[in-house]
Length: 164
Length: 136
Image (cartoon, helix red, strand yellow):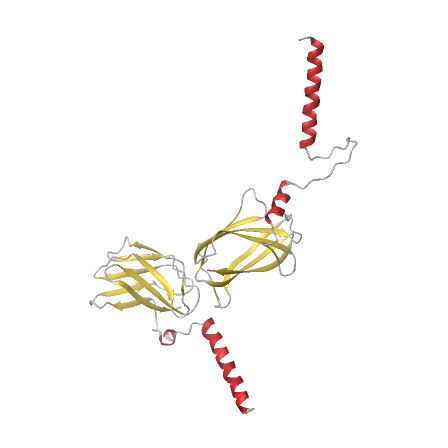
């Protein structure tokens, strides 16, 4: 192989690699002549994906959106859910804090057994919490009372559920 | 007109009392509860004696453990919390033989969810179960 052939092949490879790099990057380049469209980050895309028409509930004063994904239950016994918080437009919030989670049987005037309940932020899933070991004592209609601060705005939400 | 008024009054009374009975513990046990419930006593049909001891404080919603003892000693497999007036229980308790007292078991993870008449159903394979009543 001649030296000029080698130079041409190296130039083609360099061009190919730089093209791949440009496609895979979302960063805006000031010296780029063509305008680039900002694509949503993976975090936003995931949150939007997890909020569906079925599971997305809007809080009392439209301050936030929440989705309850059952991982174990609902049933009489220890239950586990994933709780996802979003802003009013169902996007990942810039800040969020879960203030209260309380299952309550409103028609009977009592709650569940929460002494072993744990609330843990889920690693790698922003604004998601795993709520485990809350005990629902009987079948019938229950309310999941959720109180949260999303984007510095506090609001509450009641998610009615039926325990078989 | 009088019949109509009476019917409306009667229906209202039935409706109200149904709601009240559903939402409250209608048991009369708490009206006649003992002065202190720190130690609950029970005599078995076989002439034995059993106790559930809550220590120095009266049982309450914040109670989390108790000591069950029997004389003569019995094997205990479980202690179930039940609210007869409401038709529901609580989360499972944990029962372990006491390291300090022979014939006794420590009942942990007690969670009386709400005020009212509760039962502690001690599961004893040789006796089926023994029931202690307590007012929270």
